Length: 542
Ligand code: ADP
Ligand code: ADP
Image (cartoon, rainbow, N blue to C red; front, side, top):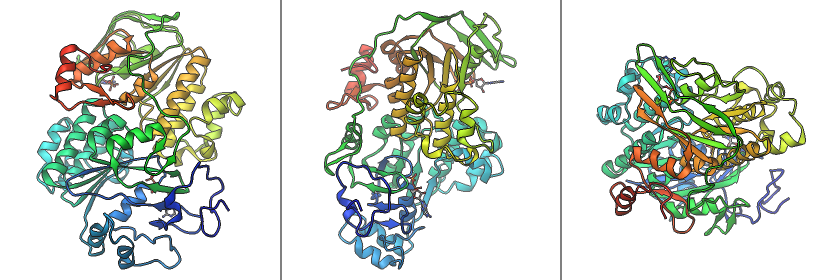
């Protein structure tokens, strides 16, 4: 017994430094003996966006099923479940009292956007228009379709949509409903920064203008910061137990989360803080040149889309970040480098061995994870491989599962491991952050960086999570132009210049949080926003 549980500890290894107070209280729900328990519940507020920040497997969906009235919380008494009156009694005097009374009376309706939009085509046969028309209860569809740029795919079959298109359609379908309570499980995967900011604004407007309650789980911290009014941090042991804290201010919640220490709870949730450098980090490396590529052009069809690449150098041993909107030619550039596509002009025959992780991970053979990874590298299982790859990507627990049974986040981690395990001159990862929680992003980031350093290899990472790019990249390559029409790829440049150029295109500026130096998105047209734009300091401003 570890002292937490009244009878005996149902979990093998709870490694926490101090015990959460909540574990001495009764849980909101326990699925059964030795099964997952959830402590605490988020409190949706009318007209507000409530955020939840925490790992996958920590009980967020369980909490939402309770708040939706789909799952009656048993208060830990799984043998003789209490009824809603008992539950109401248990929450009397708390913020949730009125809300639970409404659930008991069957007065709560909920719209929900699932986490894994990739699965929507399995559930819906038809085109975008048919799906959206079913959900248009607020007469808001035209506005949503326009703001989320869904127009061009209205008559396309759902099964033919890209991940980014599916994400925007799913968002529109959820926000078009007329319900009391909206739950959005991750809004950013596959969206570029402009689309992320638009999605955040649409959610805020629904809360502010229509007085709706919004509950959002999000792992892109810059977007969560922009989006939420209050924040619950969720922590614990994924799969074993989860604790949802009372609401914190968004700023404190994120800062405490990054620091690895929750102030009010007096709880350490991570050994090391996640820190951002105040000024442009690592000045551009002047290592050996791995490859010197010439000007390149490529267009598709009758020139519906054309890409122009300025020739440049990729340095040995650097992590090169690649940023730019969706549909601007980033994957096309990757394919030119790998030799999968022939350029129209310029010679891209680089003689490079490139290991590539595409944006949409499609490994789903009926094969076990361990068999798959050991077929890629004979390093599999060595202590070096275990320390550098398996541990930071949390693969141990899923080694015996079939690829086809993995969740989106698990599949992403296996795909990153597979990419890094190839022997290659250049590793190219397209959106490694998708579906990873914050902890996993940080660990994947440091695994990628360490790997590049130790293997003397070079990494290119395309990602839309600004925090991840900031922590990961030495230099930056910026794509601009007009999505789906023409793209331009600039030369790799320093982080400072690159971030400024990229954010100037988006007209977004970041300020620094006073306490932690964490970058935060400025309100458009605020004093700081205007000052920074005037000075051309979009990102590394003091
Ligand atoms: P999250 O949404 O944070 O990823 P979930 O609420 O989906 O987490 O799940 C938390 C834990 O509860 C997981 O370990 C999951 O396997 C477990 N769980 C979910 N539903 C049930 C159930 N009906 N019976 C037993 N365990 C469950
Ligand atoms: P990104 O990676 O920046 O999202 P892509 O390089 O995938 O952009 O695509 C750029 C544009 O080229 C998009 O409009 C896309 O629809 C189009 N495109 C990509 N591949 C093809 C192809 N094989 N044939 C015709 N058009 C394509």
